[in-house]
Length: 367
Ligand SMILES: *Cc1c(COP(=O)(O)O)cnc(C)c1O
Image 1 (cartoon, rainbow, N blue to C red):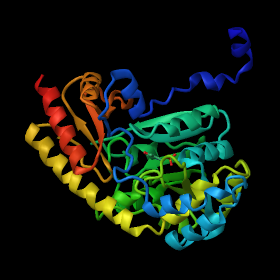
Image 2 (tube, helix red, strand yellow; image 1 turned 90 degrees about the vertical axis):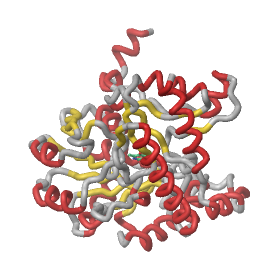
Image 3 (cartoon, helix red, strand yellow; image 1 turned 45 degrees about the horizontal axis):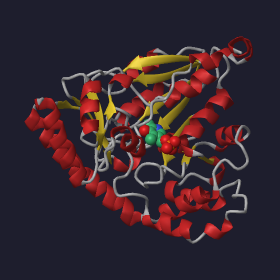
Image 4 (tube, protein in one colour; image 1 turned 30 degrees about the vertical axis):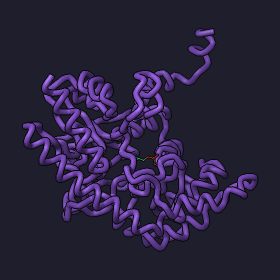
């Protein structure tokens, strides 16, 4: 049997690393017999889904027997208004995750090169490796993208270059000015992908979206998602903003009904939920301040964040910290999977979550 797989499956699949998701609450309940658990591991919105999305979905449950709109017309119409990108330049995916995959399937041949930072979001490597492309990783400096080194890594084989801005797991950004300087030097054969999953959380005034480069007609894609500030991670909706030429190429490899009906209805309603977005931004800014000040009091180094999570150095083996926090019902993410064995990544929660996390962390670090 194993010979059959070895002889028959594409060799690329054996190079894939397994994605390590945030530990689900139900799993911790089962494994540890705990009841009262908070998950601060997957950068989900602690306020829940946008109420307008929940209402719209509940009003449309009688339509489950009908196929969804393969063109996502209503959602795209809202996105045109929200972003200024015209409809032929917009793609909607089953989460941004699907869009990384579709971009790879559209552009990558075996041996092509893809550049991204280390550490950054794991999906870039997954989507490149599955196509047999070569991943060129550029370590961050001071926990930020090293744009100079990324430019220097470009050669004639380079096809894609990812900028995760803000970056996951560090929370750091590259400024609009740094990106401008960088884009001035990017050759035309390289497609730059700006992953802006945490765009709505950014507070730093020097930040600028990559959208202006799309509007200029550069070879660029901006990716955003409904999974984070809109609180709709379960629905799986992400979108790409790019030029009509790039979008129509990617459209060729897209399944006809890739975004389900409830996802489309929820996301379309969520865009209008300005109140939920504003509340979420405010809560995140408050929580960030609180956690910064507690980390400082505890003498822990943290990376300044423009997202809804903080990368913090516990000075201890992160697996140990993770397991002990887990026993107190607090789920966080370990830094070892990103190459930082003493760091943890914690999602900013409600004030109550944040306080409980800090109390538990103090307890763990004292022990
Ligand atoms: C969470 C996240 C996404 C969003 O993924 P979805 O598939 O849309 O849920 C994309 N990029 C980064 C960096 C993320 O952290």
